[in-house]
Length: 295
Image (tube, rainbow, N blue to C red; front, side, top):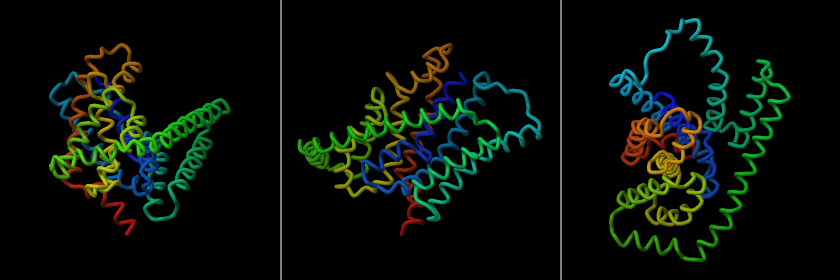
């Protein structure tokens, strides 16, 4: 019971908390500043982490068997573990902090992060030729995949414009006179349904050409919606009846029954829903940091 929620929640944080691949793809497709999107994801990412910690505490308090206590670590072991993790924490703080202070662009920050990580691996003597080869090949595969996705998007988006479907959807939704919040709830529910059977990047590419004109007509901040969108997508990817991320977790822990995995993700799903509700009520949770940097 313990492993599936941990893996699922970790993947969610990785997609949401900067540097986030989801925010990068969203920024390119919507022509929003990547730096603003990264900063917009910081506070929600921290809040989501705290919500997940609270969720784990509540679940393990109610059901002791869900997370039985392990051997207690000594202070020396804790400090040693903290020291090993400090370099990665430093990379995150320096890159995001550098973007916030205007010391470098997101592209320069990614270069710094990669270079610093390489230096740490060299100092710790963890870098070998086989490891370097595997990292380079994986980077090339990821980059090629992203570029293929973007190439498909730049072919698909003009087609959607010519079909006039976005304009039809805008007129259809505005005709209900539900207000901004009501239409945003419809969009959120649509993303949740799509997420049960669609992959995250594909969902962004297929939906943004239709959703974007609606958001602009409602004068919704696109940076704020970027954070909400990646959260909704991750909720959809955890939702039954399909839940793509659940099947990924099943591949990692094949000995755990599918029913147990689905049961284990629900507390985290509700925590993510609570964060989306907070963002709807308090949009400044996402916009505070970008607005303090870009005036």
